[in-house]
Length: 182
Image (cartoon, rainbow, N blue to C red; front, side):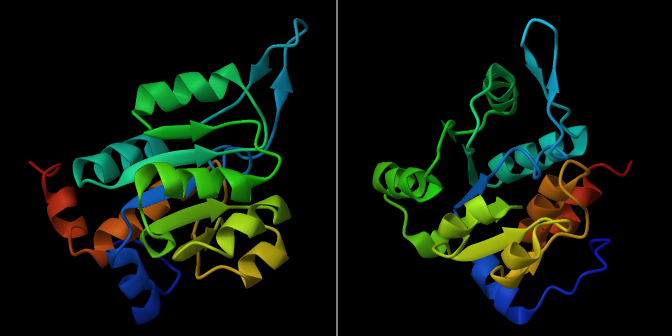
């Protein structure tokens, strides 16, 4: 069973079973929200490697992934490419527009899409998708409008929490973990 101190209700399990695509914000979700800039203006971000394996597990089970983020960064492009993330929308000042484009290009119903956010700018997307997820340290208004909250804060494995919860809801988590035990 997943080491998860936050209850996963039957409603969340029911919603999670139908998810075909998970969208993630970057700053505050896949990073801790800190922004680092070099003297040359280059932006640096720290990503959690456990989240990366979570993406691999989702992809192995046919769940697509996307990024919808307000900032634009080459660092995000490199990270997304290295993880095989299907779709990346950067520089999105209106994230709901990116969600609409995602729905149009994938043909998925909103009920089959989950999104993970941390701040109020994510609410226009979170309020539309079938499974709205807040990271543990999200803004209180975001938590209030989400179906589930991750056990860990953004940048500290929250993406992995999401991946494992989705696999658990589909009854795939135990088998996924057994493959790593000799």
